[in-house]
Image (cartoon, one colour):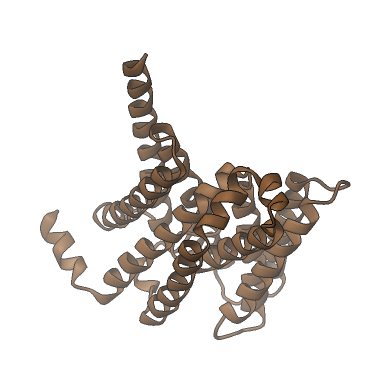
Length: 281
């Protein structure tokens, strides 16, 4: 098994997948802590469905670079979700349900009416649950992901104090002059970018797990925002790395294996948190 792993690691596509997986996990974990604390967790799930619909349109139009269409539409949907969720007539969860289900149905319908290949079911499954093969990750994907990740990390660290203030007490932050709506918008755009980047590797239905599980796992053990964020990032990167390695050795789907690793880590952290709480009592 170890020899098989060493052999696979010599292939550039596997190396690319590891780099992309680690970068996506890192970015999604940083944003995930804020989204969970602000009860915006489901925005990731909603935007992933929107990205699926946009990718379906791009496939029907035979665009060579699908991100040209998918990224702007997903970002616009993030803005729309945020603004619609603040409407008293349409609550946040209802807005996410409306947009996500509509985009998912529209995308699936388009792929059946205008099939781009003879295996429509395979295309849909690959888009929703990620590629079953690591060979689909290219150097171009790595470069795009690296640039986007640098931007996301730079924005997060530069605006850390503002994000912290808006996360814990948005009303107070607004009262002291912080433009909370602007920072909420930035967070929505960042998560939209992360989802688009992660679709090929993890899949549109599984990306929200990378956003939610590391943050929830870290919260079982730590109580401060800084420690939760740091541990969430470490845990997310570890789960992504181990998930990709396990998918190579066990020949399992990459996205599902990464999520399985994240879920397993959550239960371990849950047990550690319970033991830690019992020790202090």
